[in-house]
Amino acid sequence: MKPLALNLALALLALALFLASLAVGPAELGLSESVRGLFAGGGEAASIIMREIRLPRALLGLGIGFTLGMAGAVLQGFLRNPLAEPGIIGVSAMAAFGAVAVFYSGLAGAALYALPAGALAGALAAVLILMALAARNGSTLTLILAGVALSSLAGALTALVLNLSPNPFASYEIIFWLLGSLKDRSIEHVWLALPLMAAGWLLIALSARAIDALSLGEEAAASLGIHLARTRFLIVAGVALGVGAATAVAGTIGFVGLVVPHLVRPLTTRMPSRLLLPAGLGGAALLLAADVAVRLVLPAGELNVGVLTALIGAPFFLWLVVRARREVF
Amino acid sequence: MRLAIENLDVSLSGRPVLHGVGLTLEPGEVVGLLGPNGAGKSTLMRALAGQIAASGTMRLGKDDLAALPPTVRARLLAYLPQSRIIGWRLTVGDLVGLGRLPWRGFGARLRPHDTEIVSRALELMDVAHLAHRPATELSGGEQARVLAARAVAQDTPVLIADEPASGLDPAHQITMMRALARLAGEDRAILVSLHDLTLAARWCDRVVMLKDGRLAAEGPPEAVMTAGNLASIYGVAAHITRDEGGLILAPTGLTEGGAP
Image 1 (cartoon, each protein chain N blue to C red):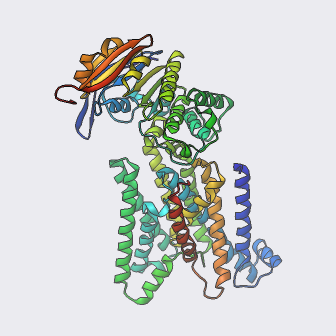
Image 2: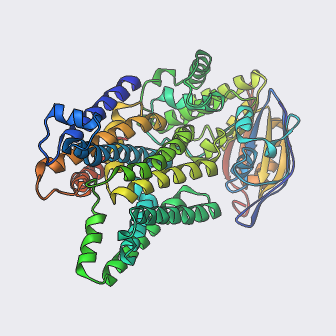
Image 3: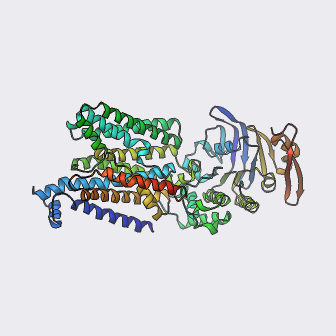
């Protein structure tokens, strides 16, 4: 498929699902009513529902999905590993731990920004640790191993917090948050996360040439004039900003970053840089679709979107592993 | 463009690997880098390509090679690593097109001029007929030629190729060496490491022999690829004859005491 046609098709798909996300919810709003609510001023119920409930949710679905898809694509290209995903460098686990620590300290109720700030601090700590380790020994393998170790550590610390949690209600709240959801987010969440995610997209886009060259391995890439240390910084910082911000407002949403690049790659030339935009758009479409689905499947109880993506993603991952033996990347 | 190195010392993880190696590479010549496994051939090439730190002087033309920014270096010196890595299922044409990366603007497509250089590189390495095939699905020898075409597509005055002919069938070994000779004919300087002695003797203008990280012999093949040097450097006895194309060397056994 031609790159332009592919990007256009995916953008239209994401747009359609964005509109679908605006149209779905427990409140029975007609189409004209919701459009009027979105644009007309005033304090009518429709306007409040559209602007303060559904719009932030749809915007976050769009932005977070784009971030996860793009982050997955850049990491797979960078690490030359089809099983890489944003979680692999430990950023989402550390962000989750940061948020959980805020829950535990009781600060979560104090301010709207306390929870995202905790998650961002966790993501930042992850980046600093990774950079310190990667600076000492420049190989890509070190980065993966450090990321895996960091993820495990963050997981263990999160478990510790749950273990020490003062009452079952607090544990329940933490677990529920960890499952990942776009429900009941406000426009402030959008303003908090979107600029950081956009900065992440920019850093990732700057590494486009480098990930193409890295298809030939690190030695050949360096001989093509690629500055490997700078590339590593751009990608780790970009993924951390984007995924850190996403986790900060939505909790952990797994598998989108892993699955989407694989869904989109066969439609591209497989040149890693040519996958970034389609994977972002595909990620946005997938997360928006999942978020619409959770509202339709269980309108009353409402499934967490992170649970649904994991439910779809894990079997897909398994299929990927089976298929990987036949070398199809 | 002349490449001149003097007194090159390289240590890997604290272990000295190269000791005071000196070497010049003139435009228009193919220089063969020979020596047993572990003699330091790849290390020397990696140092020249700026992949590992080295002390000593390395000058490319008038410039200090080590001080050149990576993007500038990539337009002057191409390096074909020994490890043959193809990360994704790219087509041969796209993969060889990566050689144009140092010449491209940010995110820009290949211009007609780039495409022309790429197709010339494909022709030179006899892989033009594979241009639309996924590179991952080719045989090992075909992949080796495709990767070599990538380095050629960089269109640099200096090309450093680490064992480009290993794993190739006899016809394509000759194709490879003839391609390098043609590139030298365009006034480029070529440094190529080889294990096939006859190939080195017949296709290189000059050979440099390394042993234990030191320069052991250097000169035209006829002068330095002698029974004595092969015995002291490789530890092999060889049957050496000649025809109109140059020397023919066939190792026949180990010398007293075996491999060094």
